[in-house]
Length: 256
Image (cartoon, rainbow, N blue to C red; front, side, top):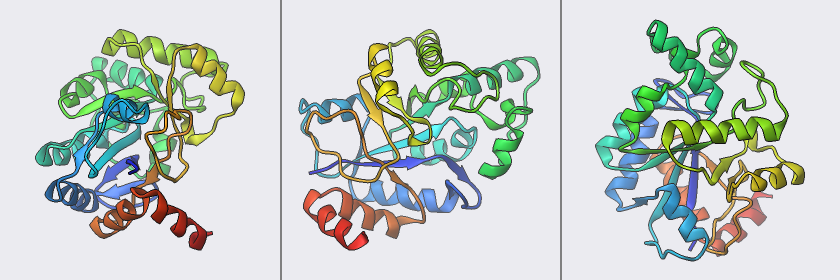
């Protein structure tokens, strides 16, 4: 078997670039719950990858990138309704700035498209990104891990990669109380130098934007994820393709 890792960014009222609509997301989560899927925690997925944990065939790992505030307002209630676990990879400087702004003057939630949000982020982090209070409230459903400190965007800081990642790791440790081993690459971009530096800082498993299967093969350097889109039918098809290595190999030949 292979565990399908789903990749989300935004959940908004309307779908768009790297955004699922509320209705699409609810359809997908309803499908998972009604069909008996186990939504994994990061520790369960890591143990599976290392060959230390046998999972039900119907297992899926739900991930979100960045830490957009719409995850709290739209995705979190739906996941809670269906009793499904998920993970958010946080850009820690964005969360810190959002928390600082909200501590001074609570920012209104600002649900923008991804393009609009990227433009407004430096001016209104509190309206666009999660803050630590919201992260604490979400922790019954969500786990939180590293997506670097700056995401290669110089909104609030611009440092060499290893220094940036060390800051991210330190913030996760300070705020959430654990030494993080899970790193999601910003935009899926990395090279051997960055991989080596991340390992030197103690990261053990790495998440990409590449599609493919995830076997219990002890290979932790290139977790494959499927960018989520559309509704339950798309999800059903994707689970069929990517949960079986043989089916995926046939599919990829025709896809190419």
